[in-house]
Length: 458
Image 1: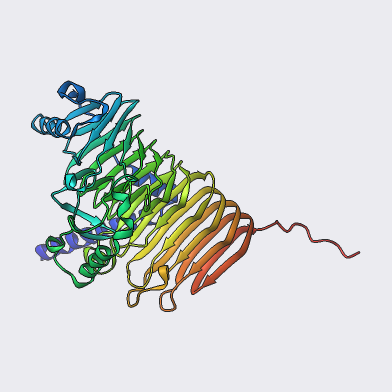
Image 2 (image 1 turned 90 degrees about the vertical axis):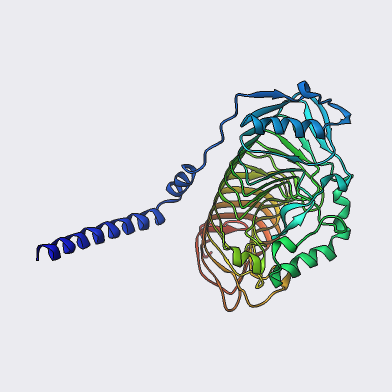
């Protein structure tokens, strides 16, 4: 009998602990926006800058805009690997690098003011192919220009510039890429093993400028990024990332600023964007592969930034594994942006977009201020996206030449639970265009001139 009682009390005690843990989880899930952001920030720590300093010119580098410094970078990075870390200081000068820089763990690349790295334009220098991704499909391709694979504790800092030299090089491949682009998507849909998806020579998929693939503890701070051949900074299957005080000057095709993909715990703050494409585009894989991988992009904070370019903040369109817990705070735009906040998917994708918070963001002239669509490019079938729990508070613009607020759900998967508060648009052509949307809540929304006290009958 005593044994039965002991087991009974243990069961009650365990059940109490389980219920208490459940209550705590519910409380955490239902916490305020500020509490959720604070919780995410506890998981983001910048890597420690190594004390072991290696000045690049001490190892034979020449910043004369002519000498190839690829071999010097390779040898200094090998030294850092042997010494378990190091701070590679790049003094003022223009350093040509004919080939990729492959970063290793516990390294800081410190570009001093007046220092510029300019990459060469010979595609063969970026072979052999490496594991990477292209528009949401994992494959092997030309190496990104700065690349880290399965590394940790890496910093790229300083007041210098990284120039991808895209306009004179890889960017010219844009008009040749379609056959390889379509082949990559076919391999994705058919589940071809990643190790058999070999691109590179004979194909025309442009490499990213900077890519961290399956890395953790990353800092990118202070540098200027310009002239990228493709996406500027691709954060692929990586976590614990801080990007701050970065400046963009990137006007080639598909020159997105930051592309977190299958990424977790990301802080993007105090950035000066000037991109020919999306400033931030949050992704999570394409179609069949994204749904199979199933790793959401989540816990992403974008704050105190200055937007300029095609679109401000974008989620999608490659987001099949899901995107959640995104916080956009205290940002402003200078000049024209085609779309301010853009959530896009289509019925090829599946997945979800949920728990998105946009607070205190101001645009000037846009084509559309807020655009949520399940019909991107009007294509696809069979895998509708679940878009819900979107919270917009204090979103403004002076003029929207096309539309103020657009929601385009899918008949079998409506966009739902959208909360719009303190949204002010001074002027626009179409105020609202909602289709297949439900539970859309308005609070203090003014589009056009505010209607004040009604006039009296005279």
